[in-house]
Length: 289
Length: 338
Image (cartoon, rainbow over all chains, first blue to last red; front, top):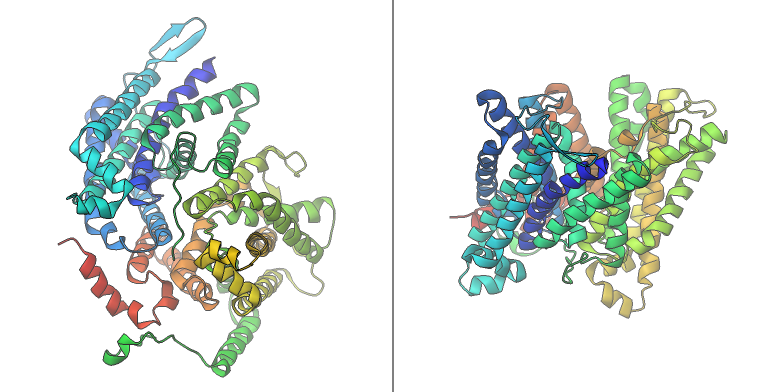
């Protein structure tokens, strides 16, 4: 029961990490390896703010998100836009280069060791029966569902959200209908980075963060976004919870070592049998060199 | 090797080396490599072994990714499997190294045939992700396999090479060189054979290739199995060379990505591209590590990004005038956001 609660709480964060990752894939066909590093940097911005000024980590969240939005938007605006016509695998490796650079930057600034963000949530908890529900985890779960809901609302009900969906479906038709596709892409990349930053902020509340955590995060983001269907944002949010549930159940029935393995086995089974994800529409990336 | 001079830039001329020059170059390089253990100090020997390892991995990756067009970003799975298989064969079954090396090739290739068949049903990004998932799953599985010498921590200490008449550092050198030569010869054969043309037609259009009677699935799986087997054998030599392995180092994601970077920077789908990439990136990486120990990943990351911006078709692509640096910079200016 206790293990179930602890890991299940991470499902919310997993969901928004994967949603950000999936968003960029859906709109621009970019598999952004550096997304894990965005999460890491978001976490460390929170860490710096909390340790320097003693803010509540939740107030540091918008700052981290805004900083990463600015980075993502600028990076797309000036650099990634140049790669619009390059093969998708070159862009994949390009984001790997970005990931290497960001990770090294993280180690330079914050050191290679892991850090824990001190917060007022630590130690306080609610007891339900014999299970302990830490307040920090609860806050994180609510905050990540709030962010997920905000994203969903934005995609369905704002002009930008509709433009984003149009670009995802067919960039050329969107351009013909008067959508400024490049601007939408830049905003989407910024938004995805902001979601990564927010996720990092939330992650730093519940677990220690280190500059080398990007890879672990991106591995799980892969699994989650494929489970929900690559490019399917609401799917990713649900899949986050599903994956966390699978992991916690494996821990409960076998041991923690198996819980590290199951996500990837699930991923392989899903990819082979249902590549569009559990809830997705059929969509295949064509190979181009 | 830039060849755009005004009028000639309109014709798309492929860079061409005459067989004679190529033969002299290849023989010269090989002669240098064979003599290297006696010419250079141990540090540079280790650097060259590493470069040859990356060249072999990149060239093996090139077979499935460059020729067939299936981006197997998780090929490091077979590297890791080779590393662990050699430990089982040499330590627990007491086989001599060369026989174990062969066994590693076979095990990695068989694993690829068994696991790869369903994975090859996916395409594009999905295939890329599924191979990465395979590597990560195998990495986690290593902790759980009971028959490894030290179950639990997953780390294994290996015996040194037991080749007759060759001492320790030279053994790694010559084995790596041997694998490199085998891989390059195989890739060269692929690039010229009916098999290779079949693979290229799969890359161009799989359905059309199927319609023309090419046994698509058999070709794909054979190409990947050889690629996996060569990666596995490389993993076996690497494991014995470094002497101790654990799941994190054997399935190292950095290694996995670095040989993909090498093949892409060098140029996919050509025999010489991955070799060129391995020399350039390998030396660059080593230089960075020695010169800027704290920021070498940062600098290397930036170099990868700039490299892809300037040479989207790899170094080999530069020989075509429409991909030259000048043409590329012009194109970049055109696509910039004004």
